[in-house]
Length: 257
Image (cartoon, rainbow, N blue to C red; front, side, top):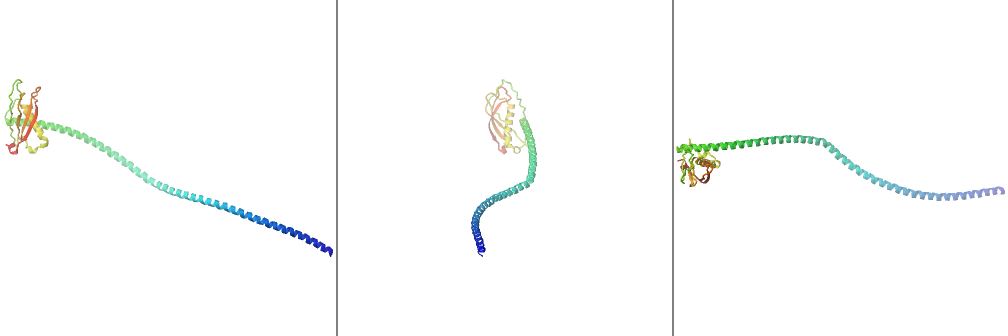
């Protein structure tokens, strides 16, 4: 019994030692567990913080990308609209080109027509000048014929060079009628009156040989009294230099006598 008790005590002591070692191991494991839990908690917090920061940064980048995508979509829409407008613009450009060609053709036609009108205008001016010269010539011839007819005398314009004439006032009076001369009211007085006076004076000067010194000559025309101072031309006695002094229209009753 003693031996069994000793063996049991030894077994109990061994078991106690094992239990003590087990308890120490348990305590150590508990400490390690706490250390590991603390380390794991700290590590989790750091990782969580890092992950949170990364997530925030990715969210910010995503927002930037979203804004960029939005801008790109808007630009794409604008470009798409412009691309859709290209055929319309090309059609307008084609129309404008055709219009420019038409305007150039119209301008060329107008320039050609303008040149033609300028040429016609110059031709008409030349014709008008020729008609005016012919009319003045015919008027002078007509005045000479009327003068010769009414005076009943054909005055010889040639006079000996040495012959002298006394200063005198030459007066002649012409009678007009509907068959002999056109009525003065049928003329344009604003343009023909001066021409008629010049024709009358030229006709008078061609029919009268003037001395070197003479008084003013008074010409009684059908419609007016003309006072003229004629200066003989030494080189050509047939072409005197005359200076119109006065021209007084006669009243209608007197002019018709």
